[in-house]
Image (cartoon, rainbow, N blue to C red; front, side):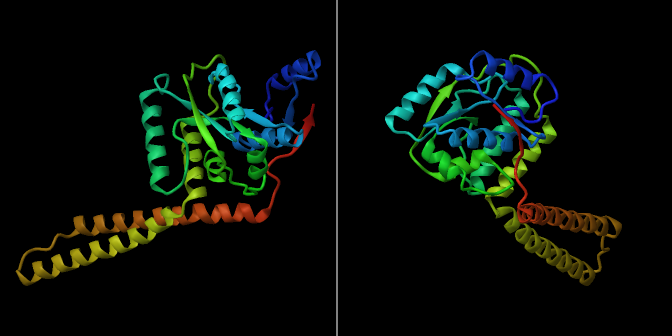
Length: 269
């Protein structure tokens, strides 16, 4: 898969195809559509080619290709989906390791199903692929969609190595965006949080009101600017946060309503 790259990736794919057309093929997207859409394009192409199963993995060579044999063995045993799961995250930084743990914990708390320490390295049989193609949403989060499909599944643990070449195309900002997309695509609990925050704000306001009344009756001085400014910023922050959460969902509805294609294939070899 070439997700609209600007380097020599497609030339390398073409050279491999020319060296052995029966073994190597490639799909070039007309424009960069993001990791999830590119992955779906590859799986869709594999399914339409009549494959029995397809294995997806990133091109940075961090995933252990030697466990492919174990994937296939599990598929032969009758498993329709086989997840590659990292046995440890020692190669990650402390920050990335703990933020990943927090993400999976929040995702589970939100009621969405996912496979911890799994990063799109998986085998999917043709039945699972067929079911996947029935999901038409634009906001793709395959790590949540695939487990929700069902079918008999299992895990294969492996040790993820260091990146062989190049630099990661997933900076912190992109990872945060990916996490938000995943959560808002599979759970409406953040909207419930807005309601909860509203009730909590009312409760805090009532407590402050009671405190002010009692202070006046006892002849004590009522705090001035400090309490007023705190209340303003606190309520203002909650309002902005609530608008932002609702806006995330409205934005997703807006994008889904357009029914735009998720990707365009420029060349298929």
